[in-house]
Image 1 (cartoon, rainbow, N blue to C red):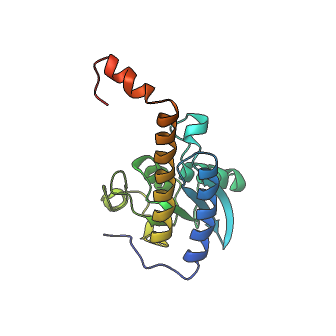
Image 2: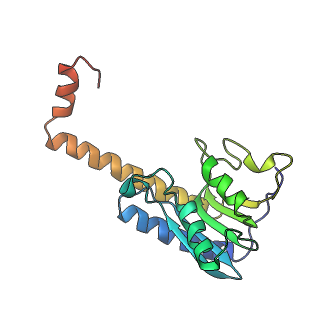
Image 3: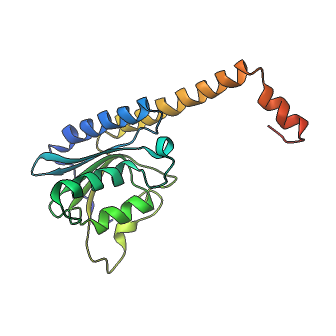
Length: 181
């Protein structure tokens, strides 16, 4: 896997900061993913998922952090910047990260369903890319994974409670229409 490197000493600190942004997303009912663009050991771009609230497919944490950093630098080129994100980016975000010329991508949890760096696809291993993004996986992996698991466990519990409060009306409606639950 070209471009993968061992974590640097500051990676743990910045990933903790990204986790705080992920917690902010969760508090708003969003999937808890947080992202921070760092340049010269200063945060210049912050992002968290806003897809559900704004109902826009592009409101991913990574894209929000990249946009914020571009606004701060008045440039689409984020040369010399690192991006910390709590979950392995999807294809859309991996492309934007590469196009923004991010120097280094650091992520926490791997995503076996849609991860575009090393889990499902290997986006940065394509020959001929005009910019190579170095990346590090697994920084605070367990903590990032746990944050996601707790969120989805809570969401499933809330959905079950709603179903019970409604007295199974959703199940009765499906049965009346001849649909299986």
